[in-house]
Amino acid sequence: MALAVTSIVWGTTWVAVKFGVQKMPALQLAAIRLFFAGLAFILFFTLVRKQSLPTKKQLQQLFFLSVFTFVLANALSAWSLQYIGSGLGALIGALYPLCVVIIEYFFYKNKSLNTTTLIGILLGFIGVGIVLYENTIDIHQEGFLIGILLSAIATIAWSYSTIMIAKQKVKINPYYGLGWQMLFGSIMVLVLSLVTHNFIPISQIPIIAWLMIAYLFIAGSIVAFIAFIYSMKHLSPTIASLYAYMNPIVAISIGTVLLDEKISIKLIIGAIISLIGVYLVNYAAKKAMLKIDMD
Picture: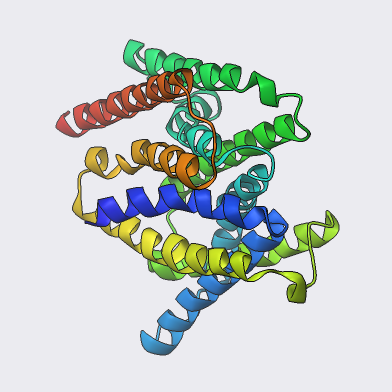
C-alpha cells in the first residue's frame, strides 16, 4: 500500500503543480508548499515527539542537502512545468537513476559499468529523444527549451542529492531531517522567487492555486514522503524503486484527461523505451550490489 501511495501520489503531483503554475508563479508555489510541509514535520517532532534540535553539524548537512533536493530539484522541476507538459516533466525526472550512474562514473570513480547498464542508459535517452522529437512542434513555443533545461537540471540535482544522502548519512530521524530540509529550501526558493520576480501578492493567489498547494503539501510532501521512506524500509530496493516507473505513467495519463495534454503512439513508445532503460540500469545496479554482498 505504501508503494502504491508513493507511485500514484507522486505521479499526480506533476499534474497538480501544472495546474498550480497556470494560476501563480511556480517558484512562489514551491516555496509556500515547502514551508508548510517543513513546518509541519518540525512542529510534530519537536512538540509531539519531543525531538531535540539538530546539532550545528547536522543543520549544516541538512542545509547542504536542501540546496540540491528542494531548491535545484523540487523548485526547478516546478518552474519547468510553466513551459512543458506534466507528462514530459515526469518522464525526464524518471531518468534520475541513469544520471546517478553517470555522475558516479565520472566523479566518484565508480567504474563498474557493464553492458546492461550501458544499454539501459542508451535506451533511456533514446526514449526521451523520441518524446522530444514528437514535441518538436512545441520547440518554437515560448519557453519550451527553457522548460527542458530546467527539468534536466532538476533531474541532475535530484540524482546528486541521492548520492549525497547515501554517502553523507545524517544521524537524525529521516522524517525530522526532511522537515528541516524543506524549511531551508522554502526560504531559499522564496528568495529566488523574489530575485527573479517570480512572485505575486498573496491576496492575488486564486483559490484553485491554494487547493493545489494544499494537495501538494499534504499528499505530495507529507503522505507520499512518509509512504516512500516506509516502503524503502520494508521492501527490497528493487521493489521499492518501482515508483520511478509508475510516476510518468500516472502523470501522462492524468495530464491527458485533466489538462488535455496531447498523447500519441510515438510518445507512448518513447516513454516505454525510457522506462525500460531505467529498469535495466536499476537491475544492473541491484545485481552488482547483490554480488558484492555475497562476496
